[in-house]
Image: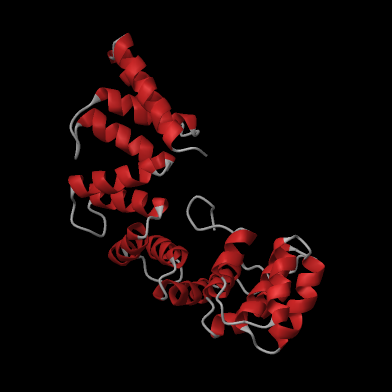
Length: 270
């Protein structure tokens, strides 16, 4: 799934921080320490017996190591073989990874229905990535009849957990009345939340909203600032808007916009 649309790979550190605490053996803890130190061979050796005994967290780690090629050659088929029993036990990360594998047809059959099944199970446990992926698949009609209202429902769940991509798309839905009653103010609010998290598409939209005075007071300085931030992230469609605004601003207003942009960047380090 396109990285800008669907949630991508979890970093190893994120995986470690989110795996449950059901496994309490010394071997599991020693394996976790080895993994954290980059000693994947030892981690694999210690986790593998636990995974074979049915420990869902160990199965998730072993699956991830095959998925990422850590300590073993990358092998999506082997990854899926370990993710599946963990996912069936309710392990959220395994459910998500199995969903990704079925979506892309890596190591398993390419099957949107299966992908949707596993994303749904993760989403129903409150996983923000699962909620976002559910929304995207309903929006696109992948593995399910296209349904903007259902997509909006899942985007809202993810947006309320702070997912910038979900906030950005939900903002567009409200601005366009897609799957929800049209509401310019609600659209602006969600777009601003996403823009303030650094979502370039949302920043470009917020720039237009300030320029037009839709859902926010008309403010060309703010519009120029948000357009400039979007352009700085490579959002090409914001270039024309930024340049058009600059043509109508005084040098003092442009300087104020640049100061505001610098302040925003200082408050939001990469």
